[in-house]
Image (cartoon, rainbow, N blue to C red):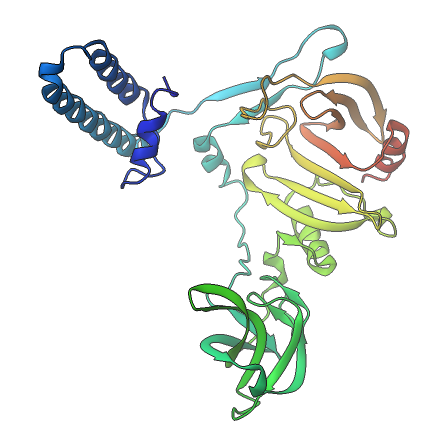
Length: 366
C-alpha cells in the first residue's frame, strides 16, 4: 500500500503537507478509491466525474489524517511496558531488557530534580579577552585587516567559556581592523553569503558583554574538553551512586563524552578514547529502562532486513559484576553487558579488542 501511495506523497511534499505521514485510516481510504478508479479506466465518459470524486476523497482522507494527528498529539497515551529482550534457553539465556514509553519517561523526570546548564548562546560570537564579541552583518576585506591580536582555538558552545572560543568561525587568527576601535571590534575568517553563494570571508565582531562562568554543579553533559567531562562525571556520580568509569586508566584513556540520560533511571552514556583512535562506548542504566540505542533493544531499521537477537558467547564475574559477552550479527561484532544489582553496564568498542583485552580493561571499571 505504501508503494502505491509513493507518487501521491511526492506530490504532497510540495504542499503544506510536506513531511507528514498517512494514518492507517487515510491510507486505506485513499487506496480504496484509487483502486476503484483504476478498475473503471475503460469508462471514458465518466472520467471527469471519477477524477472529481477521487480528489474529493483524497482531500477528505488528508483532512481526516490531520484531524486524527492533531488529536493524537494532544491525547494522553496509556502507559505501556514492552519487554524487548526476552530470556531464552540454553546458551542464550541473558539479561531482561525493557524499554519505556514517553509517558513513563516523563514520570521518571521527577526522580532527580537538578538544574542543568545549557552552554548554548543566543547569538554567534568570538570570546576575546573574556568578552563576548557578537557577529555583525559587516564583511571586511583582506586589505582592511590590521594586526593579529589573538586566535580562535576551538569552535562550539562549551560549558566553561574561554578566550579563543567561537560558535561561528573555525580555529584561526583574530585581527584588529583598520578604522575601527581595537577594543570594541575584531574580525575573523568565517563563511559569508555573497552573490547568492557561500564563500570564505572576514566578518566583523562587536564587543557585547563580559563572560560569566556558570556554576559547575550544573554541568552534567560535556564533550571534547577533559576538564568539563571530569566535572560532569563527578556531578552525575553524586546523582547516580552506581555510576562506574575508568578513572584509574586516565594515563591510557581520555573521557571524551559524558551524557546524562534522565529517561534511563536516570543513567549515563560515556565515551573513552585512546591515542590510537580506539574507543569504548558505555551505556549505564536501570535494568528496566534501556536507552533506545541499546544493542538488546530490537531495531526497526530499514537497513536491516531482519533483526537478530544477540547471542551470549561467554559469561563471567569480575569485581562483583556479572558480565555476558555477546555476538551481535546485526553489526557483525561483539559487546559486553554487565549487571550489578538493578543497574546494567553495556559496553561496545571500536578497535582490535579481544575478550582477554576487554577483561583486563574492565578489571579497572570502578
